[in-house]
Image 1 (spheres, helix red, strand yellow):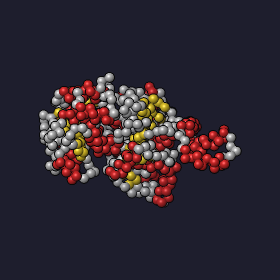
Image 2 (tube, helix red, strand yellow; image 1 turned 180 degrees about the vertical axis):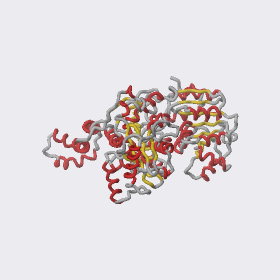
Image 3 (tube, one colour; image 1 turned 120 degrees about the horizontal axis):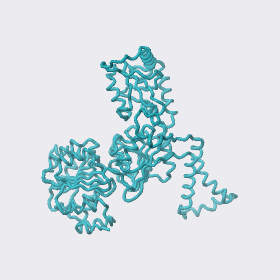
Image 4 (cartoon, helix red, strand yellow; image 1 turned 60 degrees about the vertical axis):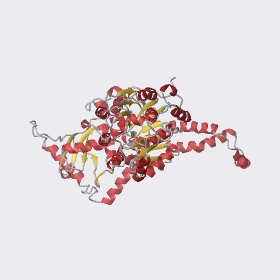
Length: 601
C-alpha cells in the first residue's frame, strides 16, 4: 500500500500524521495530494463525506504556505459554523510542528471583534463561512486580494444553502492567478457553473462513481401509511438496541416535534435545527458526540457540520427534495471504513423517488418490513441476555451479596433468570402486545414511476378535497396549485382539477396521497389563520376551463353541488380559521382528534 511518506509530504507534516495515528492515505488523499504538491493547478475533487477530504487539501496547503509571512495566503470556505470549526481544529493538528503557522476560524454567531483581532495578529490560513466572510470583507477587516490558494469545501452544500452570490462576491475579491481547489460530494450543475466561471482548466479527480453513494452504506426502505411514520421510527429504534443515529426531518417544526415526542417516550434524543441558539446547538452536539444522545433529530442544514465516525444508522423520517441531499444524509454513516445503514420511511406515493435515488447513487435499496411488536420483544430479550452475560462484575457489590442472597432465597436458577429478564422484557411486551402491523402493501417494483393513470400504483382512483381558501384570499387555480405543491412537496402532475371559488376551493389527487395531505393540514396555519383541508363528498369534476375550451361547459348540477358543499363546509370556519359556532368545542375536538392519532407526525 502507498504510505504518506511516498506522497511527497515533508517531515513536519509526517510527524503530525504519526501523532494522529494515520497509517494509510484514503483514495482521495492518494489521488489529490501529489497533484497539489507537484504543481500550481486548479482541482475539482469529487468524494463522499467522510473520505478524508480535509487532509487531502489540508496537507498540501500547509506545506505550500510561507509561515514566515503573516499575510493571509490561504482561504477555506465551508458551509456551516460546525464544519468551519472542525476544519480549523484539524488544520491546527496537522500544522502542530510548523512554527509560526496560524489558522483562524471566521463564522457567524461569535464576536466579530475578537475574530478581527485574531486576523490582525496574523493568520496565514483563514477558514470561513461565506456570510461572515463577506461581512468582514465589506468592513475592510480582512484582505484576501493576495491569497495564493482558495479552497471550496463541501461546495455542493454551500450552493444548496443559497450561498452562490456570496461565493461569487468573495471570489471576485481574490486574485486571478491563485489556485482554486474545489472539494464536493456531488457535482450538480451549480457546482459545475462555479468551476467554469472561477477556475482555469481544472484537473478533476473522482473517488467512486460521480454523485454515487459509498459502498459501506446499505440502503433500506420501509413502506408505511402516512400516519404511521412516528410509530415506525420507534419500532426501528427498538429493533436496533445499540442504535446511534441521525434522524433527518424536512422542516425545523417536524424536527422539534419528533425529538420532543421521542424524549417523552423515553428515548435518549435531541433536536438540532436553525431555531436553536448557538449555545443550544453546541450542547446538543457535545451530548451526541459523548453518546448521551442516541437519536439526533436534525434538519439538513443544521446537520452539515456533524463529523462523528461511528454513527450506525441514518434514518430518513422524510425524504429530502433533492437527491444530492440524500447522498449527504447517507454519508453521515459508513465513515472511516465502517459500515452503516441508511433507512428511509416512505409512503406509497413516494416509491418512485426511491427509484430516482437508486439511479443517481448507483446502488439498490432493500425493501424491508417494519418489525412486529413480538419481533421487537424477541430482539430486546436476546439483547438483554447478552448484556447480562458480557457485563463486568463490579467487586463493590460483594459487600451487599449476603443481603441480596437473603432477598432472593428460595429462587432456583431458572426462576431467577426468568425474573431478571422479565424486568426489561415485560416493559416491551406490555407496550407492543396486540399492536397493529405498520407495513403498507407494496406494489411490484415494476410498477414504480408509472404515471398517475396507472391504477395499480395510484390506488382506488382520485380523491377530491375541500380547502377553506379561495379568490378572496388572492388565489386563482394556478397560484393555489403552486401553494399546495410547495406545501405538500408534490410534483406538478400530482395535483389536478383545481377549482377555485370565492372563499373556498376544491382539488384532486390520487388516493395514495390522502393520508399525507390530511396529515400535513392538521392544525396548519398561514399568517395566523387555520387552513383546513377535508375530503369532499362532492363528486369529482369541476375542472376550471380555459376560455378557449369549445366543449360543453361543466353541467349545472355539478356546479350546484360544489357550491352547496363549499357553503356547508365554509360555515364551520370564520375568516380567522376557527369554527364559527361553538368555537371552543370545535377547537377542543380538533385537538382531541390530533392527539388520538397514532403517530401525529
